[in-house]
Length: 275
Ligand code: SF4
Image (cartoon, rainbow, N blue to C red; front, side):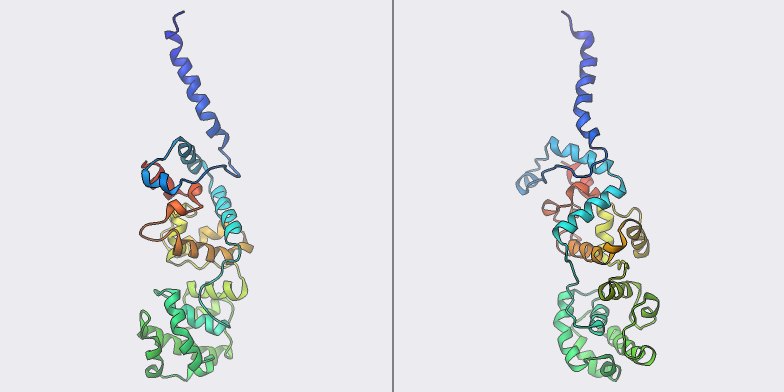
C-alpha cells in the first residue's frame, strides 16, 4: 500500500501529539520540572525537557509568575530579614542612611562605633561634623552622609520628640531620607506594606518579568504592589534583595543555582533559547 499521500497528515498528527503536553500546561499551578544541572548547563546540554519549559515561561501570565516566585520564597526563605544590625528604630535609620551606595557588610562594620558614641538622636544631634566624619569616612559619600546624619538627628529632636516617625510622609522630611529609606523603615519596623526598591529589587524584578518596562524605582514599586499580597510585601522586599545579592547578581547571575529558572524570562531568553 502506498502511504505517500498520507505522510503530511501523519506528520501533522505527530506534531500535534508532541505539542499536547505543553498545551496542557498552559495554566500551570505547580510544574514538575527538574532544574538544569550544573554539568548539563556547563556542557550546553539543554534537552527537549527544557523546550517545554520555554513554552511554560512564555505562556505564564504575570499573576502565575508572581505566584510561582512568592511560593518559592515562602518555602525556601520564609523568615527573610534585613542584614543590617540594629537594636532600635534610631539605629536602623542611621544604618539605612549609611547604606546608600554601600554594602550592608561595610555599614555593619562602621555602626558599632557610631552607636557607642551617639546612642540616641539627642547625642547625635549635638555632634559636630569634625567629630562624626572620622567614624564614617570608610563609607561611600562620607561628607554628605555626615551632614545628613547630624541634620536627621536634629530634626528628630526638634520635630518628632526624638522618636523615629513611622509614616513615609513624615520620614521623607528628614535629611538623607528618601522614599526608599522611608519604605525600608516603615516595613522593617512596623511591617507596613511598603516596597523599598533598591538596585537589587529593580534588577531582579525586571529580569524575572515581575515588572514590565518599569523605567524607575517608583514604577517598579507600583507594579510589584499590584501583584504582591499586602501581608507579604514587607518580607518580599527582603526576598528580592537577598536573591539579587547572592544569586541573581548584576554581572553574572547564577542561573544554574537558581530555583526560579522555570518562571524567569531572562532565563528563557538568555539561557534556554541560546542553547
Ligand atoms: S534564573 Fe537567572 S536571571 Fe532568573 S532569577 Fe534566577 S538567577 Fe536571576
